[in-house]
Length: 318
Image 1 (tube, one colour):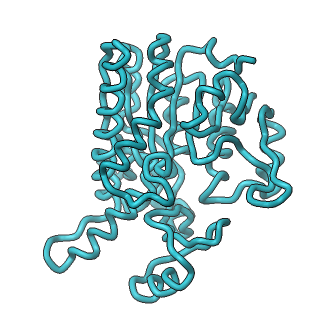
Image 2 (cartoon, rainbow, N blue to C red; image 1 turned 30 degrees about the vertical axis):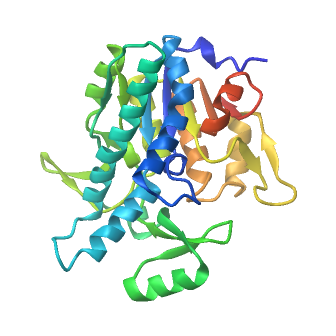
């Protein structure tokens, strides 16, 4: 059984920040680098088949850790705004993904250029989501820890479906991508591009200038926007689960293999996919397909090769 997506040429892979730093990992750099090598293995196979590839990635765990470092060192060195932490993690993670790709390509005997593009994504500073935090960042905490951090640091903490807690920050909708034209030129010329890291560095327009703003843009929403702007046919969202599930975490949970945009939207509108979890992925999938995309695949890096055969994963079609 084949999934049918191999007939297309232009792919976007959206790597979750949790695919690079897993929930139970200690979080060392070496650990993240090893996870990155695993995450890009299936991508290298597609590059070897002549497909044009752009890779985006989340940074939820990493940017949260960056914020902790900033706060704990504030007595000794100047602090960084949140948007600068996004830029910092974009460079760090772009380095990891780029190096892992180049080394994997070399191992496969493939000599192809790989480039990481520092990417700014335009948002509306008056977006209502600026005042309604939804984006989880940083480590996972027990309830007692979350309550204490909320009191001592003024963080907004949210309980997750698994019972753990995480800090949440503002996550406005992306409206434009400053470097989109440059990214398209690179893809068209055969460069494997890493872009929109962490959803992109959030900026807003003022007169003729771009100015950073404190937020973390959802990487799947930014990926859907980028995909439409650079002519992507297949968007692959690599996350921590092998498929999209109905009633996830319940005894009645059921994996979805193939589904139409109409059906998935009905489930989305019915509240099956929560914000800060699978919700933005489904919303981004709908946006991408409505904008001319051919198919979305949601699965995990570990089973991606099986997903190419149609054995696992969730395929969403127009």
